[in-house]
Image (cartoon, rainbow, N blue to C red):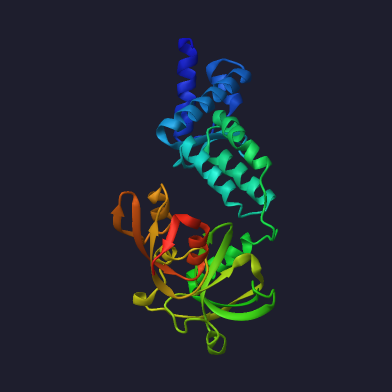
Length: 314
C-alpha cells in the first residue's frame, strides 16, 4: 500500500468502528478518488476482519444498508468454536442419524456458514461431504423439531401435556396426560421423560410412584396439547437428567438395580465410558470385576451384546 491508501483505509475503518455510515460517493469526494477505489478499500477491510476473527473471536461484518444507502459495521456474534470444534460437531451430528436428511443438511450448512471463516468453509464441507452424501436418515422420517421445541417450553414452564402416543410394543395409539421434566437424546432418537398423571395407567408399570419418569420417543407422539394446568415438583425431588443418563442404557425403563460382572476384554475404558456409575472392584491380571448401578432393562441388551467378554456374577 502507498501512504495515501493506508490513511484512507484507516479513516474508513475508524469511521465504521465508530458506528458511522460510510457512503462511497462521499468518501470518493473526500479523498479525491473514484467510487471503485472506495469499494476496493471496503473489500480490504472485510478481508482483514475475516482474518482477524480467528485471533479475536469477534465476528464483525461490513454490510450495505439499502435504506440509508451506505455501509455500516455489524457485529454478528462472538465466535466460540474453532475449525476443529466445528468439524467435531458436524461429525457427531452426522453419526447421530437423528434427523431427516434435508434437516441434517440444513443444520450443517448453517453451522458451517455461521461459525467457520469464509476461507475455510469449503475445506470443512469437503471433510464431511462423503459422509453427508451417504447419510441414512431414521426410518420414521418424522418432522418433530417444532414439536420438540413446544415440549421444551412446557418443561420450562411446568405445564401438563396431553398427547396421543404410539406404543412401541403393539403400535397402539394411547392418550397420556403427563408432567414433562426433560428432553434427552440417545441412540438415534430424542425422548421426552415425564411423570404420568393417571393412577389407572400407573398401576400397569413396573414401579409405581418411582423417582424416575416414563420415557417416550418424541417421533412417536402423534398429537400434543400443552395444557394451561401447571404442576409443581419440590426442588429436593426434582428430576436430574444427568444422574438419570448415567444409569440408563438405550433409554429402556425399569427398576433401579445393581449389577456385578467380570470383564475379560481388552479395553476396560470402553466399559467405564459406557457405564458411568461403574466401579472396578478387582483387577486380576487384566480380568476386571466391575459393579454398577443401572436403571431399566436396557442393561440386559448391552450385556448380551458383549458375548464371552462378560460373565454376569449378580
